[in-house]
Length: 360
Image 1: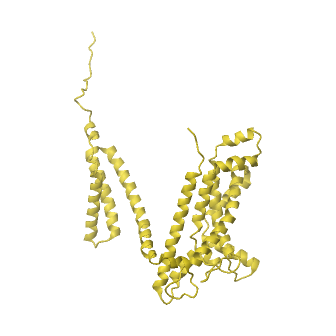
Image 2 (image 1 turned 180 degrees about the vertical axis):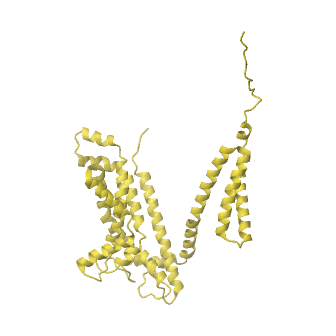
Image 3 (image 1 turned 30 degrees about the horizontal axis):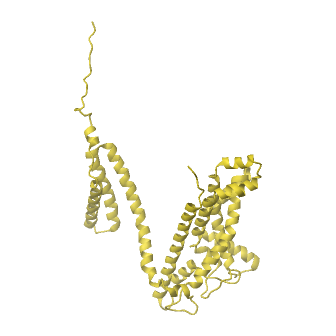
C-alpha cells in the first residue's frame, strides 16, 4: 500500500517570495529627487572645506548615484536598483561631458557677438591699427584655400577608396591601408612642414603661397576621405555588383553606374565632414600661408589671410587697443564654429535627401 504525498499548492492569494518587492516601484520623480538630494549634500560637504564647483560636482555625482541605488534597492530590489545605477552613471557621464561644451559655446557667443556686425564681414585689416576693421580678407582666403584643398583631396581620396574596395588585393592593398592609417594620426604641423619643405625645394626659401596651405590641408584631408569613402563603398550590397556582371557590364562601368550612385549620399557626407575637419586648422597655415592685412584672392601669388591664423594673430599680437583685437579674435572663433556647424548640417542633409529610396 503506497502512501502518496502531495506538495502544498500555492494559492493566488499567497504571492511568491520577493514578488511584493519586485512589484513595488519608486514614484516617477523619486530618482530625480534622490539624485538632487545627493547633489545638495555634496554642495554642503564642499562648503565645509571651502566651496569648490569641482568638489561639488564630484561629491554630488557620487552621493546622488549612491542615493538612487540605495533607495531603489530598498524598495524595488537588486535587479531594478542595478538598472537605475547604470542609468545614473551614464546620465552623469553625459552631463559632465556637456559641461565644457556648453561653457565653450556660451563663452564664444558672449565674447564673439560684440563684433558680429556688417563691418566685420565687409572690411579687411588694411591700415587698421585699433578699432574697426574686419575679417573680409580672411573669410575669402579660408574659402579659397579650403576649396582648393578639397579639389586636390576628393579625387585622390575617392579613387584610392575605389581601388581598395573594388580592385585592390594582396600586399599593395595592405600597404596602402597601413599608410592611410598612419596619415590619419599625423599632427597637423607635420603636414604644414611637409608642404613648406616641398615648395622650398621647388621655388626656394622664404616663399608663402595660398596653394601651399591647400596642399598642407589636403595631406590632412586625404586619409579622412579615403577612410569614410571606403566604409561607405563596403556597404553597397554585392548583389548589385553581381547583377551588373551577369548582364555583361564591365567592372569600371559597374563602379560608375551602380556602386557610386548607390553610395552617393554616404560619399557626400564623408567629403563634407572631411572639409569640416580641416577648415579650422591653424598650425599648417601658420607655416605655409602666413598672414596679410589686405585682400589677396590669388592662391598662386603671395600670402593669403585665413580665419584661424587671423584669430591667432589678433589674440597673440594685439596692437594699441588690445580690446579691439580680442573682440575680433573672438568673433573669428565664433565664425569658425558656425562654419563647422553648417558643414555638419549639410552632411546630415546630404545623407537624408540623397540616400537611395527603398520600397516596401
